Every structure is written in C-alpha cells, then in structure tokens.
Image 1 (cartoon, one colour):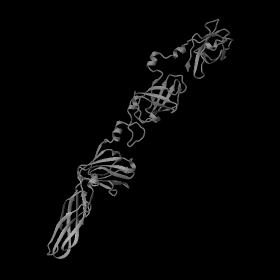
Image 2 (image 1 turned 60 degrees about the vertical axis):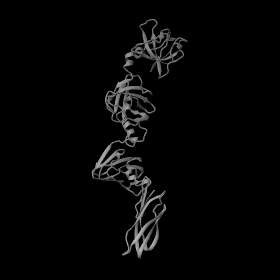
Image 3 (image 1 turned 180 degrees about the horizontal axis):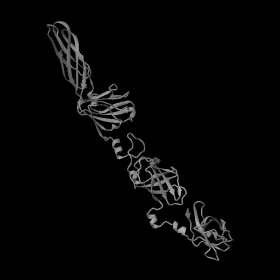
Image 4 (image 1 turned 45 degrees about the vertical axis):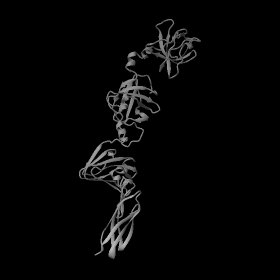
Length: 439
C-alpha cells in the first residue's frame, strides 16, 4: 500500500467521536489539508490527540476522504481505540511505522525487498521476500539465487510477507518452459519479471547465454547454439567410419563424413521417414568396395536415372547423398555422378559411344554384309560428331574360305563413313569392326 503525506496537515475534530466510530468529521474547510487516498491503493496516517491531555492519543489509518469527512481504521501501531471530544487534534504526523517502511540505504544495496535465496528443489523453487502485497503485481522484478542448477521446466512458489502465493511457472523467450541449464549452477543469480498475461515469471538473467542445443533437424524459433549453426551451415558435424561392415546408417550421423575402409562394406541409408528433406550424408571410400542402398521402399537415384538403387564406391571415390523428396534419395555430387553427367554421356551397346569432358567422342561398332566382288558400303555413326572426325579404322572380323578381302576407309562425314570391300572370288557373309574418334 502506498503511504501518502501532506505538509502541516493538522486540524480539529468538528464533533465528538466514540471509540468505535470509523467515519469522522474535521473542522469545516480543513479536510483539504490532507491527502486523498484511493481505496486499496493508498492511505495516510492520522493521529488523534486529546486537547486536554497530550498523552492520550491514537494512531489511525485513513483509507478515504470526502471533503471534511475521513474514513479511518482505528487503533494502529499499538494504540487503542479511544473516544475523543470536539476540538481535539487530528494531524498527519510521522509515526514509527511510517519511518520503518522507508527503505534504508543498506536495504537498497542488499536488495532486501527484491531478492531472495531460493529453497525447494532444482525444478520447483520457493522464495520469501518482505512485503505487504497480497498478490503478485504485473512487472514485479526479483533476483533469485537458486541452490541448484535446473534440469528441466521450473516453477516458483513466492511468499509475500506471510502470504504464500500459488505455484507459478518460470519461462523464457516466447513464454516457453525452461528445458534445463538456464540456471547453470548453484548460487547463480537469475532475474525474474512477473507477467500477468503469461501468469509466469519470465527469466531475464545472463544465464540464458548458455542455451541448450536444439534437437537435430529443429526448425522452430528456438535460439540456436553455435554447434547447431555449424551443422546447419554445412560444416561437417563429425567423422565416423565403417570397416568391413554391413549396417544401416543411423539418422543421427546426418551431416557427418562417413569413411568406408577395409575390404568391403554394405551400407543402407536410414528410412526417409526418420529424417527431414535435405538430410545429407557424405561418404569417402578408402579401400575395397562399399555399396550404398536405400532401405525399405525408398529409392536411390543417380542423376536422372531413377532405376539405379545402388551406389558403389571404390578406394578414393566419394559422394554426398541427399534426401530430395520423401522416399527419394539422390546422389548430389561425387564420383558416381561422372557417368551420369553430360560430359561423360555414353552408350555401351554393340554400336555405341563414349563422350569425355574435353569434347572428345569415341564411337565403335560392327557391320555385317554379304561380301561379293568390289563394293562401296556406308556405315552411320551411333551419334553425329559435332565438329570433325579425327580418325576412323576398320578391320575384318572374319573371312570367306580361300578368299582375300580388302577393306579401305573412304571419306568420312560427321554422321557416317564409307569403306570399300573387294572379294577376290566367290561371295558370303562378312562382318567388320570399326572405331572412330572425333569431337
């Protein structure tokens, strides 16, 4: 309750009062000398003194004033309700209670009214502060010295003077419960501000600098630790190794380098249902053959090839595999991507080709025909050379019995080349093999 004061506020009773009377009237026009208290918010001390005998007095509390009419609580600070006569004195004087309620210098410096050492347990704190408050006001600011580090959500039961309040949660940013570690150690001062909107004490202290790390794959508004940020920014979280093992990779290894050593490893990716889209694993081969497959109904793709469900790594090979959409893992980079890239396009058919990143193209094939006399034959390349044919070679795969066959490569175009075949005598089936190089 706020204590009000007025200078030189002294008058006389306008009429006699009994020892039980709680509304008194002072001399007309003098009520304005006194403060105007608001019920339940403020008050002032009123001392009644006998005009005949100065040792007869009573200290009262005035809770309301209307003009010259004052509403009072009788018999305060050890005095007894007494009957007083007209013209006895009434004044707003300093009293022992008024003086004792003033905060002294050492009380202010010691935070006597705003700090306390907590009792209770690590997650259920109790504290007592001197107070005449009957409820916890919005914005009440306290410093509490806990005797434990918290391990989870916390509550505080605060006693105001002699009134024990209900248990109130202690929360942090966004009205979120504590999770552990916000009170790092015994004796650490935590600053709390009461919010009537949250009906909770909001922790303000610097203990919050030591945040608990959000769980892997967290995408909430929680404050991120440096270790969480390091992992999220693509720095490798750690390094693990398989050596001659058959295993399913744990989801917790996401963001790590997985070294595959020994002779052979057979590894299965975790279920896509257990990790979010974008989860990545990076593999390095260090010997033997490591096969990596998708588990369950998941699939593993390399480039645009959705039918490839296995990745094989030899020594010094590497790759990163990422969950692209639910149920679909894809090789994002590394040596398994080379055959799938445009620079290494190929067709390993009988008549096929191999492209190299330099632009060089190698093509090959066979051609069967009926050899008879002198012939000029044209063969189309599996794909056209974009610029030029550098070389084309042809050879006979078989020969007619007792017959000499001569083959000579004729002029080449970007899409085909021709050759001449001479059969000395007779005729029959003949097959030739050819190789062409260009760019």
